[in-house]
Image (cartoon, rainbow, N blue to C red):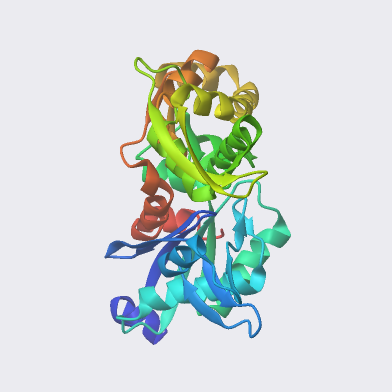
Length: 342
């Protein structure tokens, strides 16, 4: 027996990471969620030196000085830039371990269900190079279902729809595993791109990703509102290049996002179509849970319920569903043993 197994609380620990396209969240065993920062890295273009990671890097993205590059190394839930992702992981892992006496670190990382073998290996290798001694992978829909409190281990089926920054994860789960699932590259980022394109096409105004995100959160909806809302925005005139302001309403933003909602609906219906009649009956009674940042869009639960005939419920803490699920996977010894091969 090694010294690590004799004194696990002193010499080793486990952390769970939701390595998201928009944000990275970190859960430390026994401490809970300790970090929630944007998935941004700022670097010097010439020297390639890393200048900032996370919140500090995102702040630099609003006004990028000459010679500085701000990168989002995750795209659609997977690593798009391996070297930069490793720097980002090293930052978060190092920050999590900074005040610990640990010498052996297990890292559980949530990844999209649609990830391929090469992409999975890239995530694992990046975590090892960033300082982990043991790396385990958990699929995001399983982590999300755990995090929102669904009875994943029971024979009765449960359904989760997690709308993150880069992917929408749809899954039906039973007995601790996935019965049917689909990973869709249409999520928060795509909704914002749709808003940007709408404003550009309709008003010849170019707005930033940040402004599109604010529109989505402030007045975005999936169904008509009792009282539609308005919001003032600013941007750059497409032809003149000068600053300009205008007012848009929630109906416009909803119509801009509807094609994305329709694709999500299709992914849900496709997943349901691959379930047995018995599972379909379970889900008709129990419904589905919405998680992720997209779950906070007004009326999205109503929209999916109307389109599918299933009741939909918004999770109590949708933003932390995945990272809380990674935490449960490391805090719960029974779950940990059952899925150790992952």
